[in-house]
Length: 612
Image (cartoon, rainbow, N blue to C red):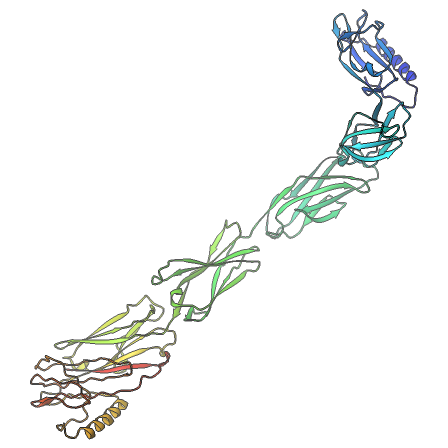
């Protein structure tokens, strides 16, 4: 057993008391045959010239043999060995009886030793270090982990010991500078005042958004607190949430992405350097299910003019915060792209929007938005909304082909617009109800077949090609007039717009005044006729339409029928070059400066006549 050394007592007195106690213990104890060696001091380091008692406890009645470093000693063969130490006495000691050896005791004899009241202390305790020597010393230095701490008369006290005080200590004694003697090192161990500190979430580590949560910090002191109180600190990550004497922390309203994360608590004793941190607990907040996702557009009808902007909004009825909003476009088949991600936004609100500027027709298509949380474990899409980008209709043309009593009108457009409606109109009334827009993609051209042998087919025809960018203002139309055959000896008549008729009359009057020597024509109001080579002599519809110059807007062509022979003619200042028989081939050209068209103004193209 160990016996503490009392520094204030004389060493010989200590050893005497130790021997007495060992004797009494051996007298009343049955003991064991195996020897046990102990030293009268509770340390294995002793000062030079200090008296030390070694005790060999055994039930063996034979003589005791002492050894040092496995060498027999010439000491009395008794169970106690008392000696005055010197540096040569350092070594490993054993005792044995009848070949039974005891344990080994390592005795170290030093000039300077360091002692501590206890090498194992608890947080909050007080510990004192002593630097001992039998020499005359001027001062002492104390060190911890090779770092200087204090210089004094050989005693160092630490109050409210903390875990940071753990380490190796030694001292250095100075006689005359630079003469010094160093002690060996001793290790100070500091045990926790709190055996453990744990943090427990209630009802659990996984909670729902908008619910409640309680955190309990449970501490287990290793010794009575006395008058001390425990202070509890609660942390969310590195941010402190509360400091209280109560061991719990309540969160009444859990918030998604705000409440979630790692929590821990710290238990501490006020006015003492005692504290212990708990384990970290990860709190997971379950988001509310997403529902009611909808896409909004401005303009609200989803029809936007080319060059304008489109505002896309996305909203959700039920969700946690924050959310991610994403907008997608499934383009139409004309653009060459099937789908595309337009934008992604993070928002703490339940609505978000983006603005698409300068829309063009390739941006037409179906749009929708998606709402998700950051982990994208749940993604909820909206319904698709069709967006139509409307452009002006351009390049509309009306061409005609004839065969016997059948006339085919072909209406076509060169516009890039794919949302088109081609409709036919006769005498101001539509022939059929045009489809509404937006509809299925309409072909760029459409034919109308007319049987001119039927009187009910006679009339004025034109086609209208339009979209709904600005209904009615962006239509382009060409007009065709179909008449009954007036007879073989008469010139065919046609309906001409009044403005065009006036211009023709003025032009013809100027022509007649300038070329009065030409052959007189009975039908002075017949419009321009361009003779075609190899024209057949039989009766039938004959027409020609052409725009040949940039500064000519309209050239209106009419052909007289009942032509009996082949005629040739050419333009030459509006003169009549050639006549034959009962018929004449004439032409006149009406030329207007090319106007500047606004795409929103209605334009009407040439008038064409079909004779039956």
